Image 1 (cartoon, rainbow, N blue to C red):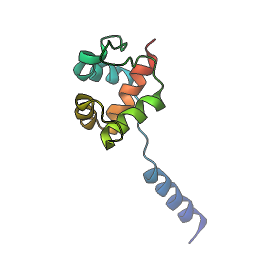
Image 2: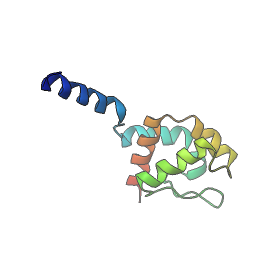
Image 3: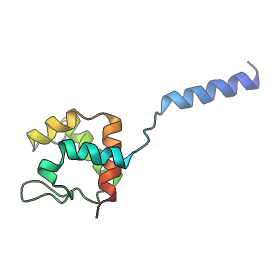
Image 4: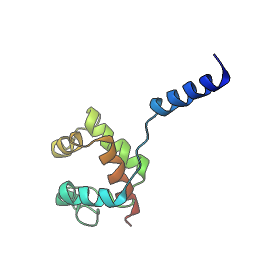
Amino acid sequence: MNRLSLSLMLCACAMFAAPTYAADAVAGKKLAGDSCVDCHGDDGKGDDESPGIAGMSVDKFTKAIQEYQDGTRSKSPKMTKEAKKLSATDIANLAAYYSTLK
């Protein structure tokens, strides 16, 4: 195998092995308005029953949603149900949006 073929093969493998999701905070804001504000509020600060998620880091937000999806977190049946509806792109967009709120 020549060097060019090997280089192309390695680039292709790297491209498909670790897909990335471009976060879009504007899309996250729209999605939040459709499914998150009822419990977490327009400002993401939550209330007595729902925790605040405004300003949460992307990593922490993503981990929390993934834990609801895989059943690691289960204290809120409504949150589990909502989290399971989210795609990886949705999660990235919501995380980008909520991380921008103070």
